[in-house]
Image (cartoon, rainbow, N blue to C red):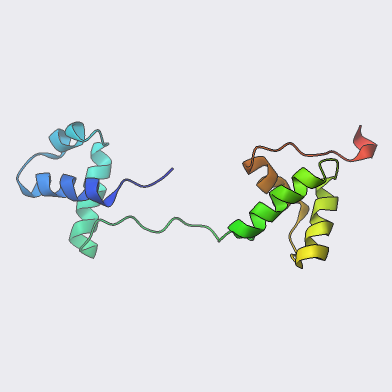
Length: 119
């Protein structure tokens, strides 16, 4: 879920500073009253209402590498995830897990090829 925009946060804080009550402001901007309270606390403690960075580590593949994997998947549609992983290692010197390749292909809306043994 994406954070609320900074513009919305500023407008909410402006209404609070103008003297409006938290519930009224929350209803007006369709935001939970507890969220408005958190923003007010952040304004008081940190001096701003900008969203905190989204936690988690960065993706292993950048956009160009993801595009290359998509092309590879189109060129070799019958390959398994393990074979795609090996091809990435050989052609692009990328060491990623089979699960990483599988998650990326799912994000791209592609189905995965199962091992021949499982069929």
